Length: 198
Image 1 (cartoon, rainbow, N blue to C red):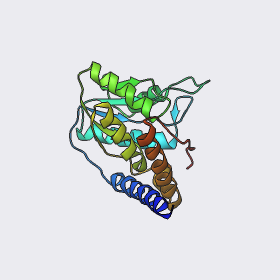
Image 2 (image 1 turned 30 degrees about the horizontal axis):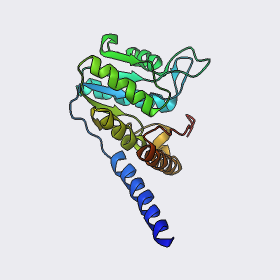
Image 3 (image 1 turned 45 degrees about the horizontal axis):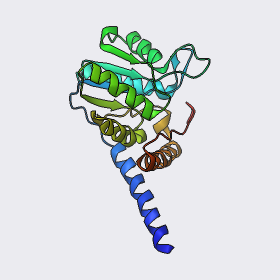
Image 4 (image 1 turned 135 degrees about the horizontal axis):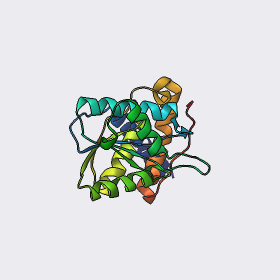
């Protein structure tokens, strides 16, 4: 019994360390596309979490990391806009040409979003992507993308509520450790909701 508990603690602890390690990676290698993982939006206005991701994607685009930005995410019941559409609108307002932005208006969770992005990229003969999300989300999104057949690496945002405080950082690491372990065991999604203020 003690041995099983120690093994479980090692697995959980090791996963948490990997979440923290990959969160620190900021790879600006050139890719076919920059993929922005969706987050909450309110009547077409991105939440502060989503805005931080979009700002990072815009910066990477201007740097020449990729010629195409993919926004992804569906909508909740009652929403007028999808996350992908609100993200595209935000980026065009920031001066990125609409023709260089693909809105994949599907995905209610990370896994569904990654699968939708894979299908869209495959249809356009795109194979590599730099993924933009919160730092703690990086390992799980990268793992899912590579499992789907996308050559993927990460360049997460370094601003916004997800990184403001030590509390939000610890919350993010704990949440992503649990979600990643669940994905590795079941190959299904386990996104835990959080508000823009977290």
